[in-house]
Image (cartoon, rainbow, N blue to C red; front, top):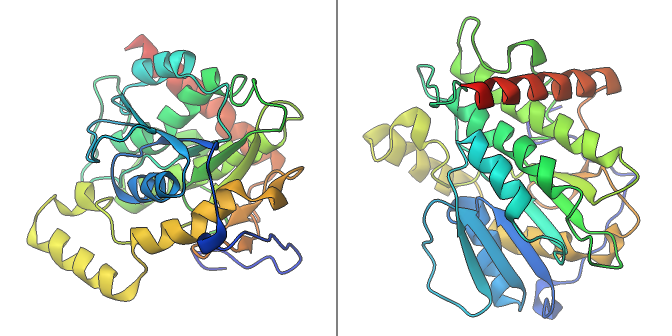
Length: 295
């Protein structure tokens, strides 16, 4: 199994072609929607008629009557918890989590004592969903959806005993722990009979700024790497065109727990993401969140 996942040929999900897709009246919230893949998805949904809320540090898009911006520092767990209680999501069709970075070469820590990649790319999502999950789509008759973007299906088992990367820090190991934790979050959410349906997204390699934290934003290595990625992989805009029809397809009604690759095709979950491992990640997440809030 590769990092992009193994195709699940037993599962078929039909979507409406982008040229015929009308999202008028649909509502989408993108956590991390102010740059990279989140911004591309938000822009595509907006262009198709959806009402879009984006959450992040800085709004980079032009004002639009159907675009709402919520400023937030997603490296802060106290802010994530507050936002989870206050963000209006009762009428949303879809909530999409795209916020993320990569781990730095040397371990970085937030003021709350959490390894920075873990804080931004995973624990903030866990904290947000504490307040969001019971309210997402609560005012709708149909079941709403949560999509968690990371790298599901890539067989990253992670280490729930070292979520905070305190033992023998390694950049790749630390980042892959966020990948595994996000898959556990998706599987855990999908196991609930109430609340929204949960789905995982694995966009694979895409040209964005996500590697800036590791390579040094604006450095020669960063620019050269993104140039190469741009030549070999799909763009954020191409991915958005593929994934937006999936977010809203009627074919996902009554389903939960599915994972999708960079072309919006179903993939199999990681073999090691057993119920016991998922529970271990949730227990460790709760412990690390309490640590952050006590700092």
